[in-house]
Image (tube, rainbow, N blue to C red; front, side, top):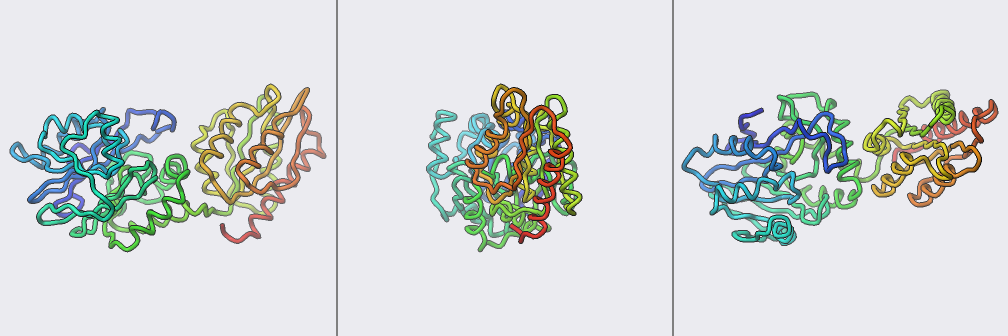
Length: 401
């Protein structure tokens, strides 16, 4: 998608697809790449909403100049979010358009100076302030901690477009289809949730507040910073984010296990069988040695139940399992049921570590908790199935959370 795309009259997508980066924030896998969305508003005055990562500046600039031509400039650069995947082209743009005024809130301008050593030709805006472009007037809605302290959204009443920054975004490139009505929404939902749970989820209370804050706006088009532009059914993705921000979940279980020699895996499979025997349909299993934590976190955000099983390693949790549990605590996911089992050789440690995790994250533990020396016997495998049975029964009889 090397040409700009008009999303509504006088408003153009001038973003880019990044198919080269393997990781987002140097942590989260990008098997389907990611888009950096920026938008150019034309008229008496021109305004660019965000930029793109500096590695893709040339393509970004080409889209802008195709719209402006050789004689026009950018009058304003509105920074909804200063993180470098959105502001990385700022320095190059300021050299090309020296009269361009940078618009952001006070915290934006503080970070602007810290990142780029410049606050020149910048103007701070407060919540609900406006910017007159001639034919249209933009308004600014500060939404702190979604997911940085300076994040804000920009609204164009003329086209009923909300430029939402990282809120309502997703991993994944936009593949031919830029708009939600050009593709099946379900194709993107896994990556919307993985993005939410890994990048935004820790700040869920602030997401709820942000949704309430812009709830009075008429939103015809939702122009995100990553992923699809929603012009047919923006309420769909807003509804997803609202539900996830309240830690609501589906009736299902994610079962993540750590097994060095197959003995803990044997227990995991019996536990999964117990879930199925009790009538639970949605069961997802992850080997933490192979599944990146971002996918386990995504599924933990999706389902009401989480079962963790780990072998003991050097008198403690198996390191990839410990990494997963540390991240789950960091993400502050709430309202989940937790099942626990584990194995040990000469001394225990794994189950103790999982109990400590449960205490930190304040999830309810489903009994029984099973700890096996070396390899489970038949009666101990029966106990694993009982974990599954009990978990499934609780979920199936539970009101939605």
